[in-house]
Amino acid sequence: MPEPLTVREPIEPLLNHLFTSWPEVKKTKIRQWLKHGAVLVNGRSVTKHDHPLAAGDIVTIEIKKGPAPEDVLPPGLRIVFEDSSVIVIEKPSGLLSIASKAEREETAYVFLTEYVRQKQGEYGSHRGRDRIWIVHRLDRETSGLMVFARTEEAKHFLQENWDDFEKRYFAIVKGALPKMDDTVRSHLDETNPFRVRSAPQSETTRHAITHYRVIKKSKDRSLVELELETGRRHQIRVHMADLGCPVLGDEKYNKGDKNAKRLALHSCHLGFTHPTNGTLMKFDSPLPNELAKLM
Image (cartoon, rainbow, N blue to C red; front, side):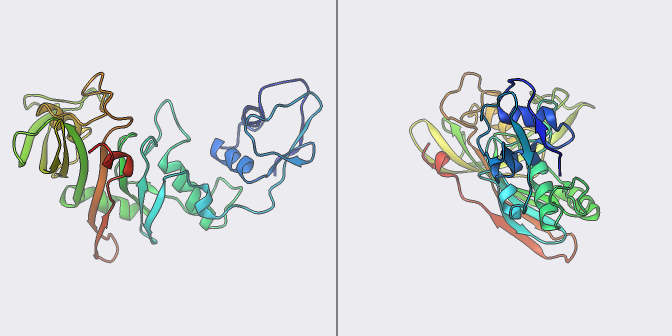
C-alpha cells in the first residue's frame, strides 16, 4: 500500500496529483482507488477526480477490499462468455481494442487483463498469475463482439484458423447498394495503416472478400449485414466506400460525414471452434439502439 503523501504547495486536482505522485502505478489502478473510495484526503474518503488540493493536505491510499472483478470494466464493456481458454466480450464504441502510441491504458485489453487478475485475487498487484492474449481487433469506433485468448495455445489456434471462422457485422451505409446481395473482392493496400485503399494486386496488397446482404432500406441509407471471408484492416469500410455507399459516421472514408455521431458498424456475430474441446461456439449481438435509430 503506498505511503501517505503531504501536499507541499497548491497543485493540480486530485487525480492528476495521484498520477504524478505514484507514476509506478497504472492509471487504471489509480482510477479504481478513486472510484471505490480508497483515496483519503485528510482522513476523509474522496471520489471526485477534480477535488482541489491545498498545501498541507495529506493524501492517503487505504485499500480495504478490492472491487468485484466486473467493477473494473468500463461502461459498455460486457463479458458474454468466459472459460479457461477464451473470453468473449461486447466492446463499446469509442474504446480501443489494444494500445496505440497515443493511448496505453484505456483499452479493452488492459481492462480485461485487470479483470482476470481480480478474479485470481491479485488486487493491488501488477504481476497477476493470469493474463489474456489478443486474437484480433476492432476499430476504436466499431462496437460488438470480440474474442480474447486465455492461453498462448488458444491464441495461436484462433489466429491460425481465423479466416475459417464466422464473422458478421451490421452496418448502416449511405444510399442504396447496387444489388440486394453480392460479394465484393479487391486487393487492399495496407501500407498506410490509417487509410487503407483498394489497389492493383502487388507484393504490398492482400486479397479481401466481403459478402453483403441488404436487410432494410430507407430513402437515403441502408442497413446491411456483412460477412467477412477475409479479415483485413478497415475491409468493410473500404469496400462500402468503393461501392459509393460509405458507412455512416466514417469520416476517414467519407470526409465530412456528420450523419451519425459514431461509426455505424457493429460486430454482430462471431462463430469459432473452441481451441480446447473443439465445440462450435456461436455468439450474437443485436444492433445497438443508437444505430437502430438511424434507420
